[in-house]
Image (tube, rainbow, N blue to C red; front, side, top):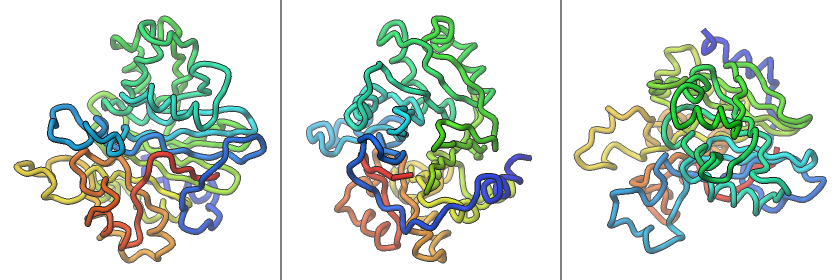
Length: 321
């Protein structure tokens, strides 16, 4: 099984990441001569903040509390290329943020979109590329085999393929894809609900740093049983964006969160508490549900996360690669 070989692939095939401190976000950039970088375009769970059906959310009246669905932008200024990892329901806002960070002449000006799986917050933004919206032409969409088949065989997504708004490009677990002379990306399988497609995370590597992206996973223990430990993967990267959907078990009154397959932030912190401070400092939780108290910078939950040596991802933060 690929999951059993993943640590070896990351350690040997991709190389150990150079030590780069705690992976703090970097500001500035976007000019010629700058190295490639990641920009965080969204940190929320699939439905964003505020979420439909939550009329009491303060985010309706306070734009500063709004958050977009989890998404990364990837830019290589020297090559003049940019990519998006995920196509969320907030695609148009996230593309605009990418335009502000690194403008290009073309529209949508994407060298590719890389998908993780077929849950609503991770691919439905492709609709903005279609005939009824921007009418894009030949945008490469990188997807695993079942994910690609799902898009090619089910409406309305198959229309995007037939009209050549998008062109499907294959991914294979554990096989690195060269995006530019200074960037590679490697998908790997993770255990999560697979109703319509595989579920993958990514390791993105530049010349100096490696970044891990796992927005969805059932439980770290489920990965253990497949022969992969998150601790081993953390040792090969400099920054890790990890599933932080829910903070603790009491977050949704009347709901048993043990039946919803995501690792609680408190459980992730407990598991990883014994790691050195430099390892814990790599971790930035994202994909936070609208109910997650760690969304608020001044909350007790956020203070607990940061006090334990971890971080919560912020929209707009950049990680140089």
